[in-house]
Image (cartoon, rainbow, N blue to C red; front, side, top):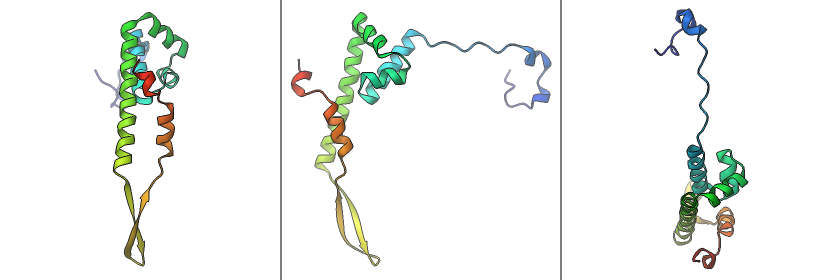
Length: 133
């Protein structure tokens, strides 16, 4: 029975006396899945390990011991690289413009060119010749 929305005075004493269940521990499969998900989101093994709550050396051992997991990690990383390259192409081919107003009338526009973060992301990617090996 769900007593969470009930005032504390109305909860039976035997329910209050029960010990709460122990929190469930994350399984190895859940930790690996979290690691893959974070790797796909952030594109860095060190960041993925930190966000998944495992040591980077542990994640490296997982990749060395389990070839299926290593392939899934490679696929996650490839998806991240594809996503960043696609975003770079979109920004390069379709610039964004901001209207310039003077005394309530639009007098022109300014092209937005603040892509330093994208440049930093592109620098982190491996070279194409290294990826094709």
